[in-house]
Length: 261
Image 1 (cartoon, rainbow, N blue to C red):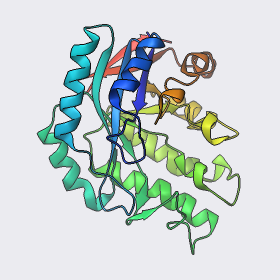
Image 2 (cartoon, one colour):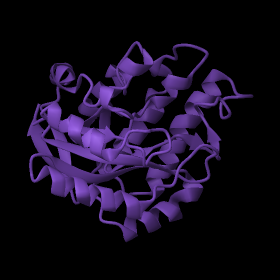
Image 3 (cartoon, rainbow, N blue to C red):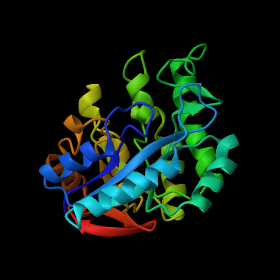
Image 4 (cartoon, rainbow, N blue to C red):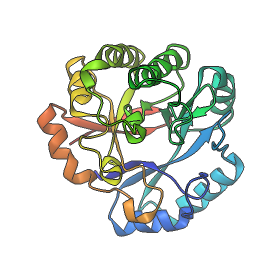
């Protein structure tokens, strides 16, 4: 089974790639399944609100065009903040999703990638605040499948490497909550794009999740163009086996389906 469960097209604000081109590339790569996971971020200066009507229309066309050669799952990447939870509850209630990535792209309406959130804070302060925000959200919001790129703050930390040891206590609380709720985490290969020294999430976080009994794991490239679709996902399966995982998941109607790594 070859799958990429984190894919963006031009229905996301930060991609210019038409869905038809992404689907064509998936077929060229011999993928069995993809989840098209467009960005939805409310109350964010540079966020996006997906046009769901256009999304499901394009998805229907692509499913018809591939005629069973590629399973295309209806997904979204919800960038949830505590105060925007009601909006995502509404979106989830009104649309037939297969899969939801839950992300933290901003807190209190302040973006990480622009450094707006980090300004005026020490590295300790913004690092912990990032994970605390995720924990607060998942204690209240349950309509998701997996936590996306859990330690994404590392992409945008201009002060350099920050030891996992300093945040593993709160990460453990996050993982315990996710596991108790029947949710999972994502292994995201975008660390190659961003030139990070470790995986996303880090090996330490992956091991902690596994040690805590976590089993639901999806694989995603976070591709915003065809060049990065499924980037090194197959190669990374051996690393996940070394850590102790035996399966990865795809989703249908929000239910995980397990496949051997």
